Image 1 (cartoon, helix red, strand yellow):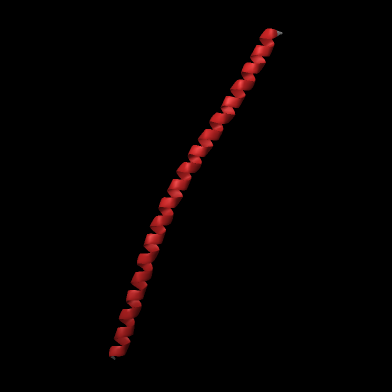
Image 2 (cartoon, one colour):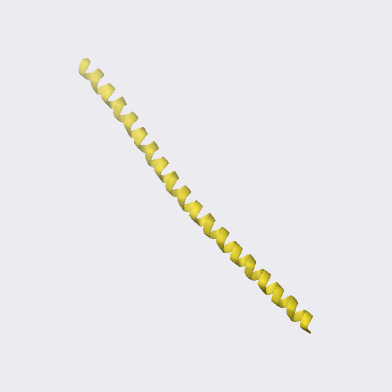
Length: 69
């Protein structure tokens, strides 16, 4: 009976440690995903500024061309 109790306690401990490991792996994956999303967001914001600036430049050039006629 003592051996069975010890094995049961060991199994419970192992299950708890397995759950903790899974949780830590999940946290790691979340951190990785968050870092990736932040880098993509920054790239998109930078790109968006360039796209808007290019559109403004095209509009100004078009406006100048119309006024010159």
